[in-house]
Image (cartoon, rainbow over all chains, first blue to last red; front, side, top):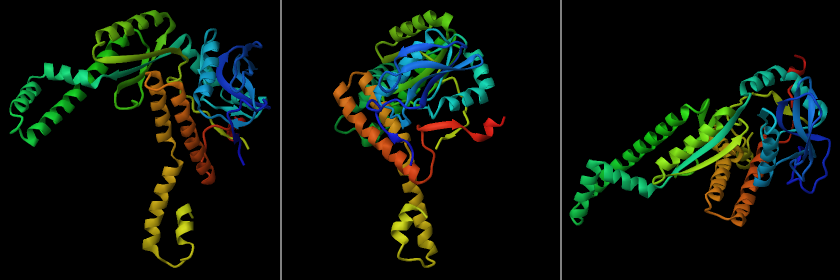
Length: 263
Length: 100
């Protein structure tokens, strides 16, 4: 039987170690009682000049509840104020300090390389949703063919054919896809000069047209911020912006750890 | 032998290849559905977005989150039952790495 599931708040911490991130550090560290579960002490386990930032935990599977995810993120945000970090996936639990040390030892080189690359880089999230009705209105205003067809259908409401309406629907759909691509490309283009890299994730729901993460140099943080604000003003009639960060580079670190289930 | 095969074919152990083939396919589809948490994670992200956009309140969020967590646990249980890997739970560095 494997680990039991629990929200963990009622469980006493055990020998297990919940790992939040990897940083470059060779001293003993105490980040406070902010760990997942019920505010466990967050501290460093060191190997050479690398540390795993951990807290003690019973051996459980953590559900990705908002509470747990926020606890995980809060620790990384705290550590990030002082360190460049490699975030671990949510819910990564090792059985013992010895197992954490084995991770640091066996992945030492990859961690070191990525920490060098991520030095002073932060991530911002940008989700963009559109207001469908307004976009359709804008399209009807700007697209001659659509406007003519729509006028015609309205004028001859009784006699206008099913096919004319179908045709209109199709044209509007195509124009919307076109508009979406145009907005997204323009926004990417404008943010290029203030970011190092970007990554588009799958959109959520049917109103979202962009779900992206941007890797930004700390020195460009202000510039990026201002650019996003300018863009959201530019599009304020059509799009709503959900802008988050700074985050650790969750979307830009991809070290495949060779981990297996500890029985 | 998969789940459905066990339930449906147990009494007939004759060479009914045609039937068996179809059932194997159904079995696979059912298994994939039972063990895939991608749509559940998408639901969770959609729920989070609703909360962030102020479309639902905290109470409604928690209510729906509870249901989604149960679905995730169900998938985890099926994956264990089928001997598949599960996210979360204790891990360690795979053995071949330790000798490096």
